[in-house]
Image (cartoon, rainbow, N blue to C red; front, top):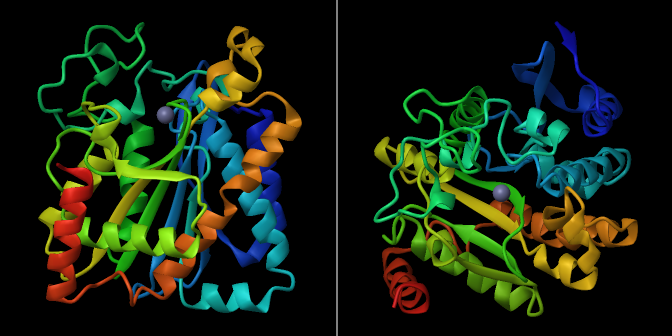
Length: 338
Ligand SMILES: [Zn+2]
C-alpha cells in the first residue's frame, strides 16, 4: 500500500516539519482507500501535564467542507512562526495545551465528499438517537449511496473512533477543556453551536456556556457569532459531540469541564456574493476566490485566541459559585429554551 499525497496533506506535513521538536506529532490512524493509505495526523503543543486546560481543534470531518481544515492549517502556520519569538504565547503554552486534528476525514477531503471512504457521514455515526428525528439529512441507514448515511453506530468508523480516543486521552482528564469542530455550509451567519444536536434538553454546563457567551459579548461587542444549541438549527442522529459529552458526564468528572463547540461557517454568504459558485463541486461549502478565502482564514483567529485565554483565565465563567450557576442557568433557559 502506498501513502497518498494531495495538496492539503502536503501542506499539513510541511507544517509538521516546520514545527519540528516544538510540537508532538503523531499519526493516530491510517485509513486504507482504493489501495492507498491516508494518515490522520494529530499535533499537540504546549504542556503535557494532565492538570492544564486544553483547547482542541478538529477540521475536515466532512471532507467537502475542507475550509475547516484549511483554517486550522493557516492557524498552525501562524503558530509555527509565533513560536520563534512570541514569549507571551510561549508562556501561555507552558500553562496550557493545544491539540489539532486538522483533517479528521482525509479520504473525504481528497475526494471532495461529505462522507468518508465507506460512504459514512462521520457526524451521524455515533450511537446516539435523535428525539423525534425523521428527516433524511438527520442521518439514516437506508444506503451508503445517499448522503447522511449513518453506517453502523455500534461499530463506529475508524476516523470517528480516532477522534474519541484523542478526546478521551487529551481532554477528558483536563480540569477544563474546549473542543472546536470546524464546519461550513449552513445559513448566512457564522454560528457557534453547543450541545445538544439530538434533543432539546439543556446540557450540563449550560450556566458556564452562558457565562462564556456573556464574556465574549462584552469583550467583543461586534463579534460575528450566533451562539446557540445545535438543535435550534437542526436535530440529528449520531452526533459525535453529543456522544462524547454524555460519555464525559457519565464518568465521575469531578468538577472537570468539557465543552464541545461546533463552528458552523455560514457559507451561503459566499454564495450570495458569487452565485456562479453553485456550479462548482465545492461551491456550496467552500469560498473559491483567493481573497475571500484569505479573509475567512483570518476571520476566526480572534475567536481562537479568545477561547485560549478564557481557558487560561476562567475565573469569570468556570467554575461558577452555586449562586452564579443558578442565576446563569435561569438566564440561559430564558435566552435559548423558551
Ligand atoms: Zn459539516
